Length: 361
Image: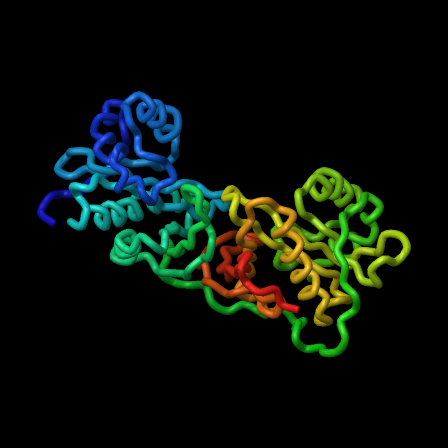
């Protein structure tokens, strides 16, 4: 590639150059937005949405603006999401790869002191050109995420790529002592129901246990009042948060919860995220697996539009990984340096169950 590729901040006067790709249906095919028919709405989008972004840059070839590259913040400060678009006249010339490499160099230089450790790119499985750009720029393919992204009326499979601030991958760490497969025998009747405020004392039995909270984002509760506030303000209004109970179906009165399972909708209407936790006395008895199976079966019918339930599990949490695999979830990828838990940057395994997968009996 003979011409120099550089990055700079956008200006409002760049709007005419942007129309070269923003109005092109082929350039927009794998982007969330539809092609722009006029300059006015694009100018408003540039002014109101893109310029306020913390890291949005113009891709320039010999000084002319030919595309855009961004690294958007995520809820986890340790990671950002890469996006880019390029005018079709510059496809296949190495411009996108050069721009992504420069973006990685610059964004880590600017944001690593603030905690950035991972830049990830989600690429449609039907977009092999962008997959090649990511790979040539040094990204590692983490795995394929089924029905992960709602795009122009369809749930799409996506390839997850990652680039870390350091090539050194964290290793080691201890596995949970409890082995979900260690104990065999009959599984007690497991049922799910909505939580009630009266469940707070039963919840304290596991919410106050540091071993139960070890792989959670929250710390063990030391106060009944704080847990009651969480139950009232977060659990009860949640669209799908259920108590895991043991006992015969149809028994009198609300059964005492021994754990909780939730399925939380995400920004993409087609997918939701599973979380399950269980009092330590019931580990290794098949209770968690049974609860996950029931949660998946129920949530697909009760959460409109959800086609994928996913679960993110710490690489060192072997017991939870086995629970998901026994419940029929598919292991898709290891996401390196994906989130901070208890002050440590962690690798996470992503599992999925999609609406067409067979339910495990």
